[in-house]
Length: 536
Image 1 (cartoon, rainbow, N blue to C red):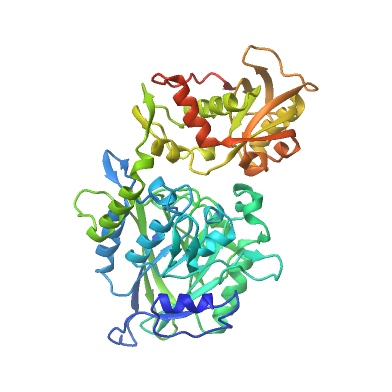
Image 2: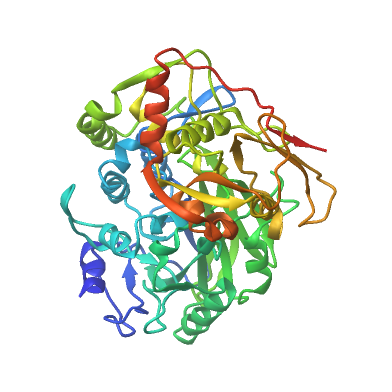
């Protein structure tokens, strides 16, 4: 009955069902009736897209010296653009939640879903971060349900679709693979897919029983089905990376491969995952992506031939959500303020002071001061010889001045536990070589170790010198103790060598270790030097 809930909650006026109660259900919806369009004129439809919002409901950022972002400003922009065309649908390309602001995360990301309900989203796909707390919690946010920490939650007012996240038990998608919305009688099909990188970026326990299959095969399977039912206007919501130059040249990323190989009836691809700019056309398919965190959104304008029901014209632009010149949406602002007040006692707790900003921005070698600081905290917490920290787990910088618990949560929001293990020197070298497999290039931040790597050496032979902090060579056959977070310990980000670690001991949550490390210093902290990784 969960799929029926989608129809009711989205207030759809019609529902044509292809086996609605099955996971592969498709749902039809109709926008409010509009004046009939003369048959010789196209129907103009506007699609407003958001990707990688990551629950940043109360966080602002700076672009060109101006403030951007924040849920109340994103809402104001979308409301403004909706007024330009009554035939407007609002879509999301995944990672709506996960790695969220504590104002959302501490309330199980329910605030973000409620705000997206208020804005009036029409359809979304999932990203890898929707899996952060496992499939049951992902479905609770979508369909509603009870959580011990927050009580009952009503769920999303809009459907989620994903064609390539497959239940291994029955071979069917865990969510409806597509959604059909009628606009002035013109059916538009939305197919969702999530990157296969999800298998590397999510802890295996959270993906238990789920297989992420080839995106193109999934798109083409359901595009064929849509075409068979007369749907000629097809949009893909792909949580897959894309980028381009501002003029559309130099298209890059997995979305380009999808465009080149997807069914020709696909007209538009909303991309995501790499938080980049994209506005380009590949194989007559428009690819767009609007950075991340609500700092921008994408505006796609379509013209549909009412006779053929096909998209005959399409164009896109990326709109930055500058605060200048627009007033925040007051309803959404009130919601954000309420949630901020609810979590304020915890996030405002003072932990320490920082003499200077400590950033996670890497230098040419891949090393960052904040990465070093976090790795040091983890090594101290577990009393190990070395520690490794994945850069993707560092989600914000540490500003100068008062350090609050909320600041530190924004930096490390994943609630990973620390794991101490034993590895040989040869295994440590093998771990570091995995930084470059499959063009991975995710440089681990280190503590207690000094690394020199050769950017011109072939994959598997890039590590040319490993020493401890005292300058002693790391012996291949000697055993060392190593601390990593539970994500890395399970082989996350492709670092499968960590799964070979012996004598594994569980430790505290990574955030708690960072809090204690700062508190124990009992003095303002400074950025550690970035002298641990060298590239030649």
